Amino acid sequence: MTGEPQRLAQAAAVGWELPFEVVGDPHHEIRTTCRERGWIEVFANKRPRFQRQRRTASHPNGYFQPSVVAIANNRSVLYRWRCRPTRRNRGGAGTRPAPERVWAAITSRVGAGDRAPIDPDPPLDTWSGADRRSMPWPAFVLAMLANGWFLRPRLFTLATPHDTQPAPDPAAMGPRVAAFGGIWLVAAAVLPRRWVGAALAFYAAVVAPGIVEAYREFQHEPDNDREPTGATGRSA
Image (cartoon, rainbow, N blue to C red; front, top):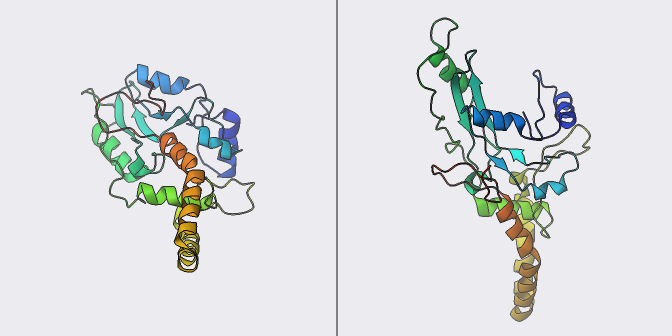
């Protein structure tokens, strides 16, 4: 399920050769139903302004954070997990629990036969992906800045079947960052320091708005008991 229209969801399914059905939910109707029935509350980013960099994506009411919910025939919940987006995981939307973990949790509740359990619904799975190494937020912002050739942070997006070049990878920005830093070091070694200082201050003023925008755009939901909110701070 995606926050995009069905047309784009189907195009992605064809391009990625997905063996299962995909559903577009641009008006968040399914998400709202899941919340009203008490199945799961999915985080959604309400301010996807950064997506203007992508011509192949359109989430008119914001994009969903990854979530998994398994429902039995009697509408009881067998399993649920949701990604809590923070700057630690780059605004979420990156990791999912392994299928083996999800299936083991489901089968442990179903037990023998096909009847669903009648005990209370399970709590959210606490797996957060924290056991996976993730690029620190400052390094990720620097990688986005390198992806935008140090003029403005640029997102790392998935490649589409129509792309002629592979999608950029944050980890591949290292040589570009090293070269950019080397230019500044050479300039500091051969030019007057006041010139280099003035140039660095001017450059900081140029890139600061883009960095501030990236900081605000990436959804950050602290781990507490309040209901999920979009990046605007309004209740989702």
